Image (cartoon, rainbow, N blue to C red; front, side, top):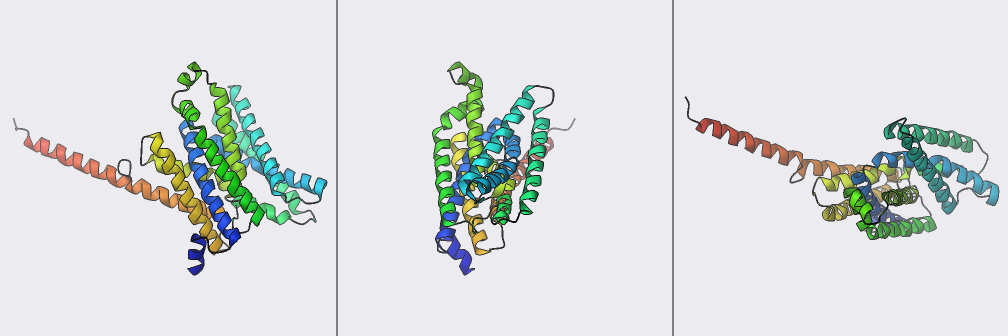
Length: 313
């Protein structure tokens, strides 16, 4: 318990503190970027892109070994993961544009191909007699507690920059989500805005590899916005609510992971976010299960009183 309290108040060591703050910034960025993805109906594309980071990650590890004699170089790994995810996103768009198969089928096909290739490459790397190969498995589920100081600082800085960039582009992304026709009429290309949103998605996935891992990065993009959506109908309120929910999930999940070394960071963050969603699903004032049940009970009583008050023929 003392270790958990120390991790929550950033007193469990510099590495743990930076990783926890980085996870909070990452959660906030995921909430903001995920809000626009949710409203634009691009969530499944995020799923394909997150799984498609694996082959680029492994290929970057192999390139680092061949060029520098060291495969576990975080900037190079992030670059490879981002390139692979971008290629998968373009493949989905190109396949869906042919109109021979639906977008959902295109996403499923690309996801399967890229993740299968990544798994095959990862198995190959695990058989090599080189150092650092075991660390690649941490990118599947994330590991904030096991990051080096330089890696934690890099993730925290990049997550903060991504959050600020997403907020600065809020007006353009709002037009894209709610009125693309109005955006086109005023000179904004919806195609370019979609690419911009995909760019934010890819940046989040690349940054989040170290904290939540490629398998669970999608949850941090979806669960905080879905939680915020239960509480409000206005984007001006949904964005900060999603950001706060994601930040709290990142903070608490990373603290739990630091206090319990055998607990992977990604699952811990996602479980905290899921707890917030379940609580909101039950207690939200308008869309919550309790509120809906109360309204229905009141309506039934009102209908019953009205029926009883009608004169009998």
